[in-house]
Length: 593
Image (cartoon, rainbow, N blue to C red; front, side, top):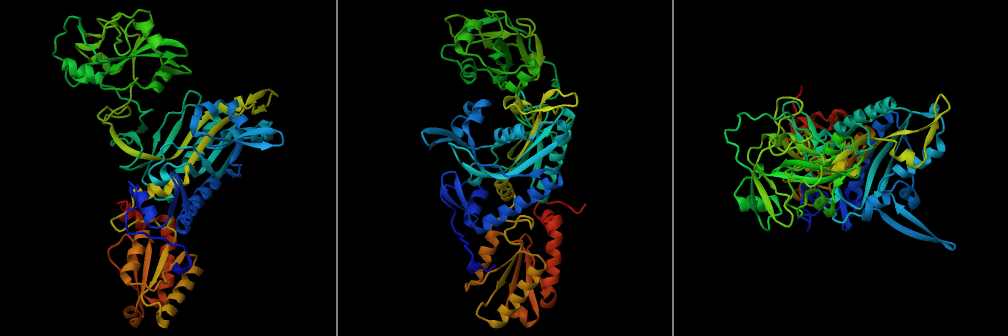
């Protein structure tokens, strides 16, 4: 391909509204063009990179024995009503209706495909002999993002690989999950991503395992906890907290319980300011309903309760904050002034492990018609929880649950997710099979997603310099860019064409920058786009029978004999495409071991 025959739109200035490196460089290098908020067109260079990522995903899915199909982007709304996800998605679900004859047909643009694929399987599979099977597609998805941002990170239209496994038993699901988990490692390694699989929350019917594949990035939308000692990692919804033992017992003497009027202080921050106390002295008391029954949860004031941990600890189907009416009934106090001491109803009280270390705590007074708090509260003396458990979000500095290390908080962005769905969708949509005893059983599902565009954006977030993008060969739009210095010179162009033909014959993706422009303009654009290998064909080099070769991430150039250059570079690219060794060593800082 020649530069002048393609549509390559580079920009010198940072685009308005672009805040993070991937958004800035994807627009400046001509990979994407904004259509509207949250919607982008992929220009030729961007599409080539997108197809490279898609190709890696497809190869590894096929290697894992998944079978590709292509489902429709449009689905009848009735399927989503059967699984109650019309309400669950809310405005994110793009709904519309069409007229057919004298009737109106409600439809949705699929944000994911659990419902359509399960509906298909309910009609296609009837016997245990037809399973296990894993089906996947690479398809456009649609979600009405009310706050699209960060370029292609969060958009209303995006390309996704979604796969679904179907098994007869939990053991089969575990094996399907393992295959996908390992395939994801291969995919993201081939893409040279700085990724980390983290334990994630799978929901009340999502099985006992879920992992998000995160790219570590300062501009990530998610917080994850990581132990640098043993590499334990989890998102904040799932992260466990290790055993917390104070390094030194408190020398503070327990005080008597005392009620203090605290008008206008319904928040932790307001109480701390009013009473001049640190938030770790507060005993935050929350009223939840677990499967419709009220419970009380107490955490320290500087911590946040974790509803998923509470649900798992209680083995409940659903846990949600109680209504104001229930809170007043249980505590007798205005909202914001609840405490575990003197509850008006006999409901179970559960406390986070670190609550038991609090001496002379402060909590709501449960005083009817009064805005008041209690001071000098002693867990075990003034109230006795039914149980202590890990019921809060982990924070930086917490002990690791797997080793003696200390947890750190890091920013990350999600690029993939694997989780066990169980029978949530198959029961709702009547996807059943006859087992060996001729008994109908619900099919057991797993779900596995990858955001294709997020592979590109996530890579760029960690792989750029002041000049532009640093692509690994595996994802680069073109692997080699030939830069003739004098496009009007016959000898220069003849040498360029010879190299182009040799490299193309060797299977290398090559672009010729045949613009009649200054060397500085060409070099700036080539570095901005980030082609891995730049080859300069100039009169000085040709006089010595040589061409100048430079890897994008290296400072030094190499002079290669023109007669051998095509063969040598073809071998370099073939090796780098497979291993990414040069890129990893320089850009990712990996050694040769």
